Amino acid sequence: MNRLRQPRTIALVGKYNSPEIAESLSRLAQYLHERGVSVFIERETAGHIGKLVDLARWVTCGFNDIGAHADVAIVLGGDGTMLNAARRLARYCVPLVGVNQGRLGFMTDIARDDMLTCMDDLLDGNFQPESRMLLAAEVLRGGREIASNLALNDVVIDKGAIGRLIEFELFIDGEFIFNLRSDGLIVSTPTGSTAYALSAGGPILHPTLTGIALVPLYPHALTYRPVTVNDTVEIELRITHADDPRVHFDGQVTQDLQVGDSVRIHRSDHAISFLHPPGYSYFSMLRQKLQWSERPKGS
Image 1: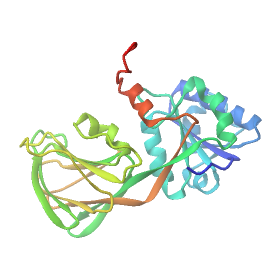
Image 2: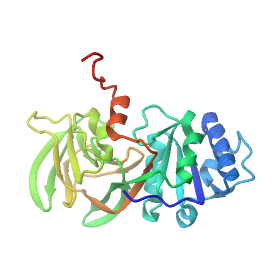
Image 3: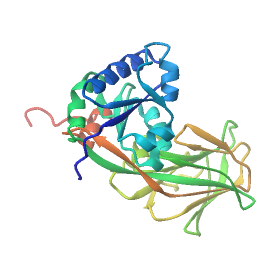
Image 4: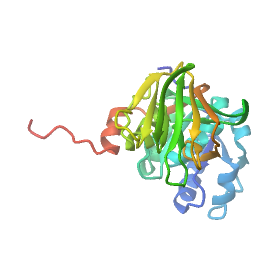
């Protein structure tokens, strides 16, 4: 991996309306300032936590300015906060560092209590970058694009609030694969393989793999199993029968669908770079987060 250049301008992005985030962000901003770093506070973050701490001394700006000027963005929160920041900053190639203020935190490496001690390694350029792919998806109605978005974790097509199954056709690079009746389908990146796809019985994909997992949600026939395809393909889902179909991007952005709509999904031209502290191990993270047992003592 390439060595990270020493960051001189750092943006801070946090979960909203959280006293814990406000306190951590304020301490981190002060520490970085004392180390000679220019600090930006993301505007929506500042607007919410500014009610809890005094942020008047820091520059506040939107994601566009962060993308144009920041060397690194530090995200304080859980995976949801990281997903939002990743989609917003993907086209700017700003690397992301995660400070875990949530629960599981598969994408936020640094524990809150270790936050300041890890900053020295970051500022000295000792963090290691790791590229993560994103999915790009377009919704087509009558052959015309009506919506599009990016996803770092997954694109999910589901039946909506009504209990009846959704039915759709799956095509890969224009080839008909199958007709599926189910609660929906998860189209997941390797990063998202430890999210919704994992709970639905999908495989865990190492984040450096170049693959996309297709994970059916409670299919009507048990012969439909998760499939992993190459990240160079185009995936198309055509809705053939449904009462309230929807497509979700990272579980945060939702678009209503209609019968006859198509959702086309492919690897995005953009990628996200996560910065990991020295000693980071993906499998060590999995052991901790998924509570995999260690080797028995004395064996």
